[in-house]
Image (cartoon, rainbow, N blue to C red; front, side, top):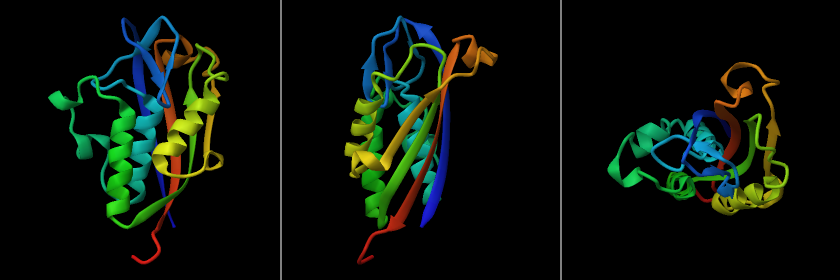
Length: 160
């Protein structure tokens, strides 16, 4: 078994959609980035790539690449999972902590879990997503940014 950890943080700005775990969340601010800036998915991708010592999201997909502008991070996650499978790995589980002051995410967590599980090709019970706050501290606590931490475990696939 191998374990990987990932982290991502993005600035909150006006004029962008807020997408977390593949779910568009109604809010007046969104995350700034080349893609849809889905911090949950970006942290998961880094954790998955880290688990197999294959770099990070920037190494695998590039930074500032024209074909990535506005792309759904779920597309990148699907590509990452295909890459892991091609290297002989299967995903066991994923655990994500999202640090956000507003909006409250409780109504969206189950759909996020299902979206991620579908992409990882695991049951939803193998994906945990939790939201917490920064208790008013720092750039997250003042609602200038959001961050996510992810941990995953993978195994080599049978027959490889």
